[in-house]
Image 1 (tube, rainbow, N blue to C red):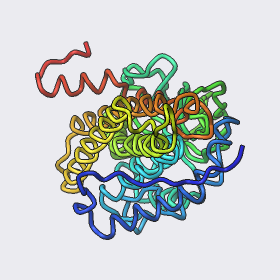
Image 2 (cartoon, rainbow, N blue to C red):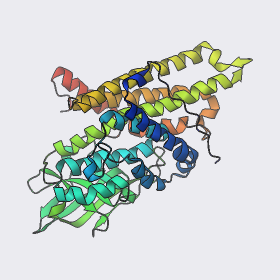
Image 3 (cartoon, rainbow, N blue to C red):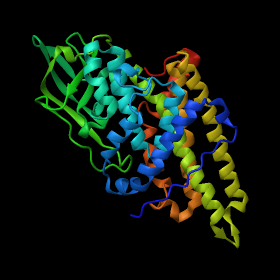
Length: 394
């Protein structure tokens, strides 16, 4: 497949750039340029072949996209949350799978080691994860326990200086290529704890998930634990219960809120350009009312989401954001992006289903993003419980 030239121009209808610092804009520009140079020319081909572009792991490490909010001493960028959000926006503008690689590494692997690990664990794992020398994954979801992680069956038993882990995890991004896995399992008292597994541990395997119609350029797999001996120094010492994995998911969901807007921006930009070039009935289709309606509504929703994300980023920087606010932004980003992709596909007509344009790939990717890190319905109920004080989950 011929490489596409990336002509993307970012929509900013409300001059939100004026709310950003020079550093934030510089970081966004660096990631945008990376996507234009390294991702856009290759991503359609990788998606068509359902293959993970492994070279991006080192590239994302060099760019500083892994653990950007982690302190310098552990290899992170010590950046603020708006900078992190902008990074995720630009990566997902390229492809949701590329953003997933960075989200998992930073929010689901590096964050729990930094927040809940020992100093020895931080020094051993974080610098190599930050550079992309090591890739990591996060094991929470199980074949029979997705939205209800408290029912997990994975468990470990005490065996002297180590524990014996059994169980399995499913739908794990990065799993087939990971050197490190953060795995959540129950101890003998039934309490959930985090364990750091390393590639090569006997009885630990990560088979690849095949046959996906979505996130085809992202590596997805299972994690299988068959009497795996895990040294006790690999247990995260500073958290017990669902608070551990859920706090990681809050960080990842924040990145998704920004990322989905990147996918929406790409589809809008593609549709706008196409509407000016495609001639039907002797004039550009962008001159017809129904196409203008689609484009105007796309831009309105993108602008609203940009403002929502910026405000959430400010709250994150001040350590005031709640997980419920993050849920609202994640769900909103997914919803508007999916709708915008669908409308953009209609504007492109038959061309919209081909790999010559990014729209159909984004649309298929977003079907996964809507579901992972908390489904669309679950995030709605999180908001509902927060505003009513009534639990609809049980």
